[in-house]
Amino acid sequence: MAKITAALVKELRDKTSAGIMDAKKALVEADGDMTKAIDVLKERGVAKAAKKADRVAAEGMTDVLEDGNRAVIIELNSETDFVATNEQFLDLLHLTAKVILANKPADLKAALALTIDGGTLNDTIVQTSAHTGEKITLRRFAIVEKTDSQVFGSYSHMGGQISVITLLNGGDQSVAKDVAMHIAAIAPKYLSRSDVPAEIVEHEKETQLKADDIANKPDNIKEKIVEGRLGKFLDELALLNQPFVKGDGESVAEYLKTKDATIQSFVRYQVGEGIEKQESNLAEEVAKQING
Image (cartoon, rainbow, N blue to C red; front, side):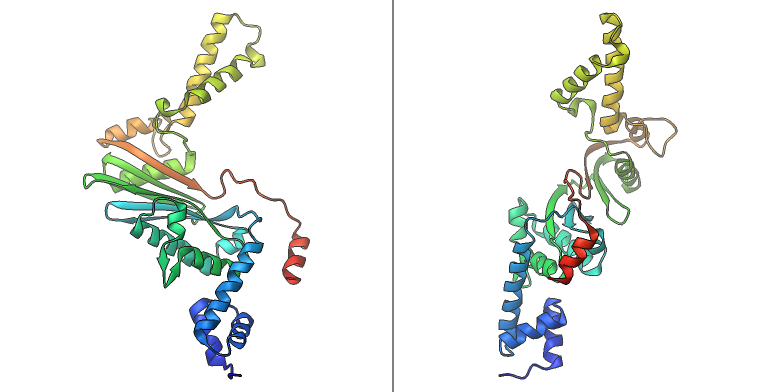
């Protein structure tokens, strides 16, 4: 039986970020063999991650990274905001953005298969998940490319709770960032009115036609009222029609015109949007952690 020294345990921890006891147990099981001990920790990490598979990871952080004519926006999720703000999670967040930007994977499956330090991105996520004790998932990413004449604008709000990338024709980075800040704050769903799907417009029209406050009005009056309300509804959804948050009443489209710019596209990620969060009892969660 090999002697498991403190130096050996430290070396394994430096290589894997494992806890002291986990590192020591792995070295004992591997009889002091560092390579085998790393494999043991990986196997345990996979096992722990499998146990967390049915848990909901609805917290986390977003990140934006630019490099030349390419930019990426990602969302990495955890189960609690406590883990989402720790150094290990944030290191993983920034590493994931960097690796995806450099390699341009086609989808999530390809992203998780990217090679990092002899393993995959998925291996790295699993190991971080095992170390933090929470399920961590790469939920989504988008890669945006531009020409030399186009401009990126990127902005992250509340430390990464919301991130935005804008792509402008004309203008400069300051203008592009201002529009990104507007998008972060107001959360438009579409670029213009014409981008709103017909079924959404029709559903809203039907809803407004049934509104109690116009039920007794003549049909021609009712139609005019509904058309007016529908216009306001579309303006709320469409970026270009929204009042610019840093302006004096002008729309985003009008603001861009004063800067000799137009917007080509935008991507906005907000942590956990669309995920149904689980309600949990704090005392029960603490008990589960204590009892393993």
